[in-house]
Image (cartoon, rainbow, N blue to C red; front, side, top):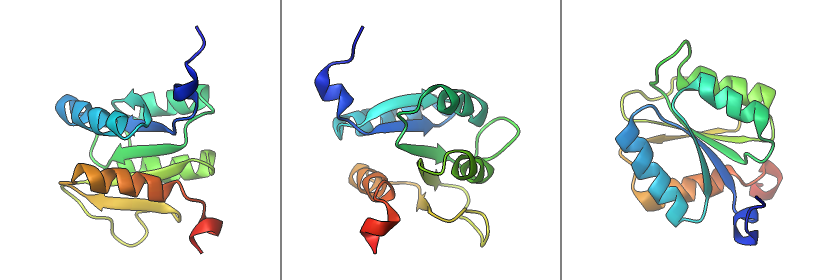
Length: 132
C-alpha cells in the first residue's frame, strides 16, 4: 500500500521512550504537529528502525531507558552512524555534563510543554548552514 501524499511530506520522527504513557502522550503531540512518528522502546529497537528506514529525519530519545546504553550514548552512536539524522535528547532526571552530548545534538529538560517540544524538534532539524 502506498502512503497518501500528505504523509509523504511530513518529517519523520523516531521516538525512543520506554515508558508507555509518556510515549503515547508524545506520539499524540507529534502527530498533532504533523510529524510522522515511528516508535521504539529502547536503543536496540531504535537501531533496527534506523537500519531499515532511510526516511528518519530526527530522533527524539529519553536518557534513561532499558538496555545496554543510555540516551547519551545512543545519541553519540546515531550521530556517528547517521550524521544526517538530527537528535533531540530529553530527560527529567539527569542533565548532560560536558562531553555527554555529541556536537549537533540538542537537549531539553522534562517536563516539556507540547509547544516547546515541537519547536525544539523543528529547530533540531534545521541544518547548521541555515542556523548561521
